[in-house]
Image (cartoon, rainbow over all chains, first blue to last red; front, top):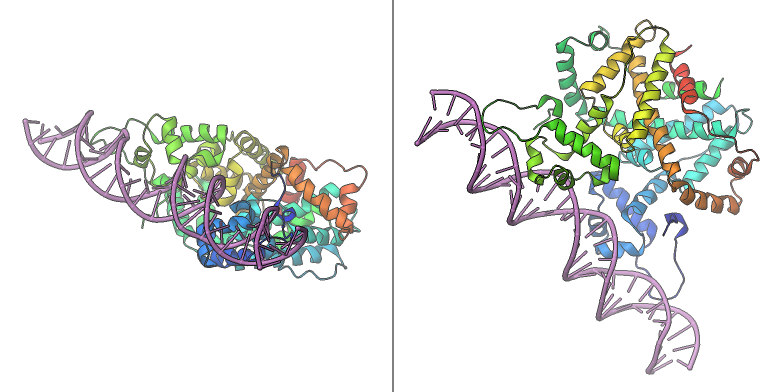
Length: 219
Length: 219
DNA sequence: TTTGATTCGGGAACAGCGTTCGCGAACACC
DNA sequence: GGTGTTCGCGAACGCTGTTCCCGAATCAAA
């Protein structure tokens, strides 16, 4: 069955040959590799090579590759610097979003993991606790607060992912096709939007999150 | 280089041996496979087998597997039934969200693709055109309208993905660990939230989207 | 100090993957 | 009947996650 998440599977019985590495060493190596060459480069063999060991050895620290991905996520999530909760909730939540975006920009592979695997590790639950603390006096129901947490995470990841993609040539590809679409002439509003003189700058991230959270939780 | 998206690469010169299949036949087979066994089952070999052909043949229709994924997405996006735009913008946008969720529930692999590959195909641009038409008289800037489109898509996908995951045992795994966290006693707000008597039902999807869009675009 | 018990390291192997190569077959046109 | 061009696709390459299994290392008990 093995329905247990990674976090509950630390071994360490004290008997037998001691491990030469630790789970967090493996995680750190995987993160370094992902930072350097992207998520796709994080294969068991490559991570093992990073550590100067064999691929099969990693299975002493982790049951599957996916577990390693969860560990990577939680390790980065540990990087949130959460101030003591207090004061009005909106600035508190926005600070969480701001730091999330920062972490994701530093680790370009993180948005994808946040969006596709939602499991919360120890530091993820710390983050949730912090958000709930910020909202402690807010009259919304528990369901809405959890919803706000989910929306914050998903939206921060999705918007940051767009940002990162647009920085790296994906816009050219997209642009080539959009030009073709505009030329076909059957998308008047799209055409107007894209050729509209000023082409105003995209809204700022924090501003966007602020409006979303206000809509979600009231003001 | 091949920086050109799939949509601009239709061949059909009329000369030489005619193809035995079409791009859309391949796409349909891939979708059927994904519906039945999930995205991971969509390998070139499996899709080819579905069509009774060899894996290498697919490369006559598609340059890489990722192109096939983009085709799958756009094919499903073709399923939106967009009414003539008109009337107030919010109900119009909510109807788009509602249909998006419906499509994603019918094709459980779609949220992941929408979240991780943002390229808009022909039907994706049709959808964008429709959204811009709905917002034609809205005073917001073009940037904000495009932002609203991005947020709608990302949030619909993310929330639907959560829904689908929670239906299938992922909650047990998560629950096991959350229980452990609660037991540790250092997350008072989380504990309160999870044990809080009623444990109100999660907010309804359309209600959530409504509040988000209102926050984003005003009311 | 020897003997188990137990854990770790990791080479080898397996099944599967995306993709490329190259060749024979099938067609359109001259 | 060529000839040019495209299609189908078996075979191969290099990669992947994962499992098996055995030797080595360590601790506890004898």
